[in-house]
Length: 583
Image 1: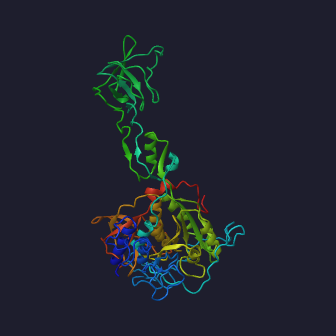
Image 2: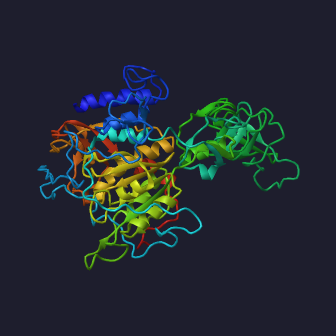
């Protein structure tokens, strides 16, 4: 089956699972031939996942075994932790689950090393010399015992790597939607998504307002500036300030000083700017205001309801609550907003070899992912506390994942089958359902996505830093976007400023920066230092280019995944957390 055929089958299956016509052309929504509707039907989403992973749903009798020739009605059984015994023909995985050694001979990256890594790279694994209190793997005398850690029994069977777009689609649809919305104070709604339309609760402005400092005038000039009773004769006549409601009517041929934002008095026909008027003393001790040009009616007055009228639709459901939205909501009369809560993520950085401060030494290196992942998640509108560093210990990892209450647990490293790669054994021990186990993308194909419980998931990122970024944008971002009720970004394509050599079978994600080209206009320039263990390229990048198998020539328009800094940094960045070693 080609990738295109797989795409078609997956689309049909997803149509059945997510609102398609039962028994439609996808073939997955209705019962199998000869199988009655109801108890014999398989779950369409499971069948889509199984198809994508080159495996069919396992169908067995509810009894202990199915005898040969039995005519018992088959019942679909969900396999909690399914592994594929052999790789699909298009897969590029190896027996160890790591990247196939591959050196792209890009003309702009001759210094890049082989794009390889086993998912347990020392560059991105985190260090912890002791277990966290209360997170041991021992049994609790007051409750049920934890399942024992599985014993190693040889290499884990190699899964089939999913095509990159299918893996992202599965991640996006792994949950049916966001949690129920809730009302929150304006300040707490920042970075959330509106669950109810924003409708004006008042006219804006709610009264006729002066747009300038100057004089409110009535009728054509010149205008008399009278001193109210009790006002000092030697000073300027008192004016109308913002926050004060004038009660006296301004008569024809009269003027009164007014400040910007102040309510225009009844009878006023215009506002004359202070720089456009001249006050002259009269022989009787009064003052008169002159203007070189007439003041047309309505000049420099913001009329009531100019921006909106009460009941007007201001923003739709799904709008991101930005600082500007908070200002608009406050102006429109809101004290709180109904919005979807931000997803909660917990980051577990695994490994004994990493340091959280100082220079690398004695075979240990600095943790690159801990300082990077939490701010990245904040930029996506996700609540994430400081990452936890865990030792390379199976019981410690099991306890941390089992006790987490986050919507999404994100681990770094340990997704392959090395001696201290404990992610897969932990998922088996928890009875998790693996949705994605390997993606045909470079760098970072040993990534995974698993369902721990309804609406609780784990994303396993590879160990190398850029490979972890690849896993973040491939699996974590689509899943978290659905949980946050954020719409996907509109597809965006830009021509390449230079050719990019591709992997023979897999998609590549290459850091690019925007550059102007005399002939092509805005282009995406591939950057150096894009090996799986490198961050120098992504640190200077504006986006990641999605390079198809075989590569692309200069001028080819490629899909871009823009980095979230400009759009998402402010809404989620105020957490009070400082990276280890920071000020």
